[in-house]
Length: 384
Image (cartoon, rainbow, N blue to C red; front, side, top):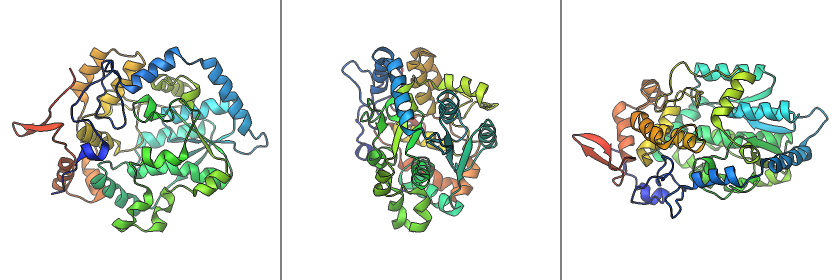
C-alpha cells in the first residue's frame, strides 16, 4: 500500500470545492484563481482577449519579433516544438507559409506512440518541414514514467521534460534564439498568470510551473544516472543566456482557438482525427499521439476531480463553441472515464500489477474530494 498523499498541502488546494460561474473548471486546478464573482482566471483572461487586445497591434509586435530573428541566409531561424498534432502544426505552418520564417520542428518522443500519432507527424513533415526527433533511452523512459506515476501522480512527466527542454537543447546547439509554442496553457486553461500579459516566458520559472518543482536530475536519488537523464535536462542557464534564447507563445499574438486550428491543419498539413472519440472526453482530434495520454488525464481526475472533459468543455465554453449547460452534460457523461484501451500495455510498460496500480491511484485520492458510496469511489461534490 502506497502512502496517502496530502494534496491540499502539496498543491496548496482550497478545502472547499467551488466551480466557476461561467465554465466547468473548479478551484482545485493548481494555481487557478477565482474573482469575487466566482469567475475563474481563465475565463477572465478570455474576456481580456476578446475586449482589450488589439490583434492588429499584436500582429505588428509579431512581425517585429520575427524580423529581429529572421536570418535570410538559409539557416533556421525559429524552433517549433511539434508532435504532428493540430496546435504545433498550425504554428509551424503559419510561421513558414504566412510569415516566411524558416522553422525547424522538434519532437520529443511520446512514451508510446500511437499509429495515428506517427501518421500525423509523417504527413506534417511531408507537407514541407525540416524536423528533428529525440528518442531517449527506452529503459530510462520506463523507469522515469513509473517513478513519476508513483511520486507525482502523473506518468507523463518524462514527456513534459522532453517537450520543454529538448527544444532548448536544439536552440543552444544550433544557435537559434527563438522558440515558438502554441498556447500558454497556464493562462488559457487557468493557472499561474505571471506570463499572461507578457510576450515571452521566463525560462527560469519553467521548472516550478511545468515540472511540479522537480527537475530531471532530482530523480538521481531513485537510482537513475546523470547520463541517462541528460537528454531530459535543459542546457545550462549560462548557455541559454549566451544564445539569447527567447520562448514565445503564438497565442499571445493571435487569437488562439484549438478547434479552428484543427480545421486549419486538416486543410494545410494533412492532419486527420481519430476514428473514435478519445477516452475520457468527447473529441476525436486532441492529444492523439501517445497511448498513455489517458493516464495523465485520469490522474488529474483522481487528484483534482478535473478530467479531460472538464478541461475540454471549459475551453470550448470560453470559445463559445458550447454553452455551460452542454458542458456540464458532457462532464457528467465522460469525465473520469477509465482509459481501458491501453491499460494492460501501460501496466507492462512500467512493470506493475493491477493491484499496485490501484494502490497508487488510491494514494492520490484526497479525502476532501472523494468518499466511498456502496463500495464505489464517488466525488463528494460534482458540478451542477
